[in-house]
Length: 208
Image 1 (spheres, rainbow, N blue to C red):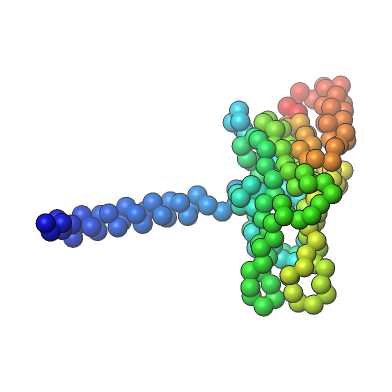
Image 2: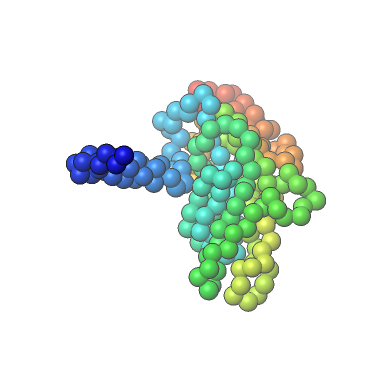
């Protein structure tokens, strides 16, 4: 029995629907928008803010947190910015670097032999501004190769607070700080409590 033939018009509609669905998927991909103004920001109950802190000696093409793209096209240097994400447990899962020869090098932090195998874990707390350390990407070989890299996550919370006070003080004013890394930190919560206490004592009724 010969299968029924699809009418040209219907086939075109199906192709168009698939194209629209594909484009919608592409539009939803990519890193989340950077949060720069916390004045009118309203988070959902299950959302939090995450401080992305990176210092890299090589350009980063893509940076993935639990296989979710968090940043792309980061040049050499230090970067600190804030994104909003669903609250929960994450981990840095992949760093993509474009080598001098044009080839893409993929580095998986989870496969690095570490004394602390929880070093790249991240916790984002709902309603908080979570910081989990500075991701350090170092180029070991002095040649043009990106094949040998050192990847580490170090707690530089005081440095992050100083930077946020310069770029986004309203975020620190409105959202309590939370350390979401694995190395332990008493500074952020203490700083956040003291800042709120001082603001309350001064009669400033702003949130945070």
